[in-house]
Image 1 (cartoon, one colour):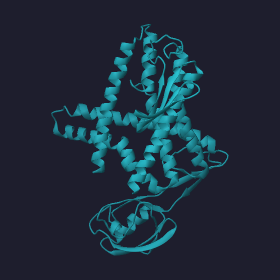
Image 2 (cartoon, rainbow, N blue to C red):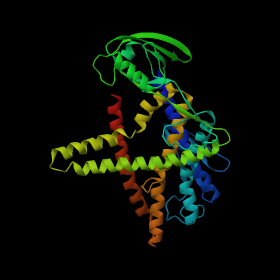
Image 3 (cartoon, rainbow, N blue to C red):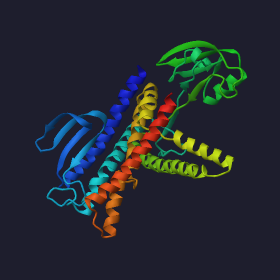
Image 4 (cartoon, rainbow, N blue to C red):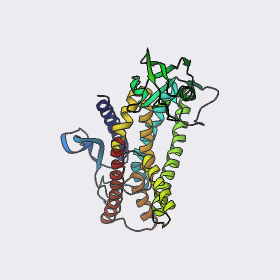
Length: 379
């Protein structure tokens, strides 16, 4: 049941963030004289539609995977009144990048709200205003439980907070690792807190697993809390995470392409390193299946703070990736338009559709590969 609710929650968040993105395009288009023909939630086939007073068709569609906005004369070569193609270069730039901007702003707003209530600290040098920030370290929590492990036999679940372990107080993850190692193979008592209720359980630890006698993933959250500086922290965190996201994408692409080229080497050790690089690149990304089937169910069990934090990260990721000069994405469309303008060549409908179509096929291929990897992780 947790999985089902996690999937529903994940779908709602993804649809909201994509619809907000498309709303940015629609608002910018109307403000710059471009006619918006349709604004849809979900993707066709269409389930319901209504023509609004401003003559925009508002539709609800059966595939709940985001949303779309349809502009009049979407090709750069269109020149009719109200066509997107008839807008100036600056107007097109505002329309194209409005979705990126609004996703970035949503992330900053969410991080600001979390800064007031408790923003998870996930980077060692995470942005704060030292004179206003306080950092609260929470109890050690169970992040995941392995099947047929001592943790599972004790009844532990993700989200449980460990208070005492083998009759000793627990303040950090290293305490449990040390105590478990000292008591390997022994029966230990675990005192834990689940949703404000304290429980006690006994289990026999694994005798041989050097680093995992309990059979559970452990975590300990640090929360940053601010007052007057919360809006500054929200914007600063968004900017810092944007840089980290770009850096991470660069690392993933570097490992992927180096791995593909190294696979051509006649040396077996080089090919093994190549396979490891490709595997690391695959483990670092998640598609819709991974987000809905794994990440959101885990975030749901971790509480509202983690859900809002994940929502902010996804919104920021949508903004960052869409800004990249990849055909079929906003940044790619802007880059194509700019290059043809600088070269003083006409961007015909056929050329634009070919460029964006190739980019779309490559993008779909990557999504399929990531989805296959996600299914493999789940099963």
